[in-house]
Length: 397
View (cartoon, rainbow, N blue to C red):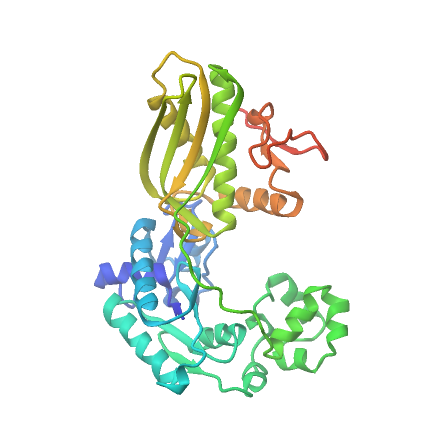
């Protein structure tokens, strides 16, 4: 099940005058990024992730809305609770997408009838349009949901997965992005049927290890299970110093490293935090903490300054400090793009590049130069043990 143009649909629910009008949600400045766009804008070539400047040039009549992540999280939670109350097993993969395992339901009610009833209840109780695709596995269900949109439903019976996929563009297959799609098209492969007819070994020789997975998906084969949904409420890091300290530079650098690492963890887990807390334990073992509620986010340049601000407000005793800690609470599902309302394309690309480096070479492979003297928060070892890290330096203008 996938909520249709989720951010756009929420804005239209709150303001009916936006119905059937071209709408862009995201950064309102020319350097902002499109987080979501209505179907009316897509015929002009607009898509999410595009710079707002380009989107407005392509569709000048579109209404631009900055958006509110807290509001979207509220409606996402509402839909999640509806699904949770109706089904025995579901997986929430993003703020607006759900996989639901209806195995065995056909004996008592009928899978398609049940899915239709659930969709109707979500639309009635939330006011939001939602589509679903019903099949024997996650990949075919996801593709079917995309084909059912907007605000509709589709059933692919067992044994009909290949015929359903065959006439579709290769870009419809999950894992076939712009780069892989272009590679296939350069070889004259445009339709899924052509992938189905290719030997798996040939696709592996062209695309590497992902070739087999793409071939399986093109043939409607997917054994990935639905992972039960559970909400992690918080993540945190603490550091106890070998010797109690009052060195403000050292303390601030430790807090920076903590914030950087926790924010990266949020982005890798498709999570956002709505609450930040800082903890101090003094040499007399008395412990104090201070927290702040914020709009949901997972980006360093918002979280790290807030951590420093909370520390400054909390630190009031003339005693050595034994421990500092940072905690991100009120975690909700949501990807990085939802925080782009105040960011520009340059900032977006920076975070994506840094996270790509960390995923490839390890979480401590790139960090701020200011934290160079801090033993890495990630695995409690000095960053210069092993391969030298990449340093992210910041120079004030």
